Image (cartoon, rainbow, N blue to C red; front, side, top):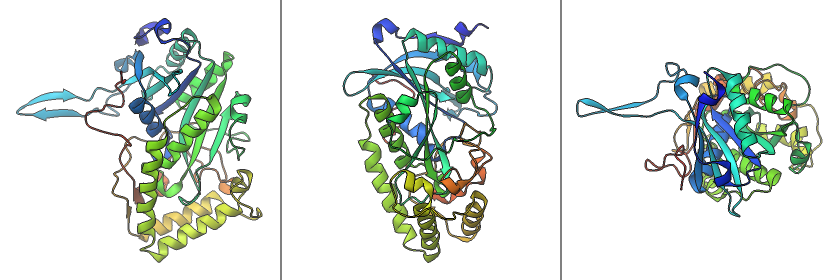
Length: 365
């Protein structure tokens, strides 16, 4: 099969107009708090969209490893939750367009997939590719979400709030289709920017809209696009209020949160981002913080915000899976596997703006 037959085309570049930015956040890889997925759903659910390309999921996905749901009613099968991997063009509040690559991460043919996305990007005149994801970090939910960046576009990254970079140094991590996409596009001299928002380790497996709002704010700053964040901020307030209410009921939980706050406020991450005036002194390692959290969560009652578990699997590693030590506020695990994160202890709200009548993978006209 040729690269061209990996996808079918929809609206043309001539019909859409100038589209200088392509954003991607696929499900199935590292995305703590479902931060990237929620951000994409916010874009597709609140902005006018047109389908540009639909990828052949029969070719690219292993459906036995992620079996789609089917509905049985009145003695027969009546519906199939068909997986989607697509590119939509959305218009921001000022009328400017950008492309959004969303859906399931391909299981096979990563190189062909990267070539196909590159072809679509060139057809639409894309000048900047931006990836979004959440990474589990030793940070408390009571502090502002912080973004780390990576990539080749220093100009776009430089427009963001100065902060720490968990992607400094050299390391190896489990690959992902999105990481390979960024690598191949950068090799073709297309500017690439990665946004990784730090998500509290104990909320990594739950919906965390604060992180998604931070991604969209930084995406807006980096690209100049006018993006909808209000829904996420209002949901964040409800999530945090619910978490705080439960924390107040347990002295043990309060002690863990205070410990993370103190360590966060002393760490280079807070000082570099201008969030603390503290002096950076010795900060516990990722293993020390992870061990403390795991010991606590093994004996503590489950926190429940009443908002539901986050969908999706974050067990596969993206580029942020192995940044290393959390002494700089980076992820609290270096394996790329969030299954060890104590995120199961907290349930957060369902998808913002989610409705049974509003499929986030279906473009809004």
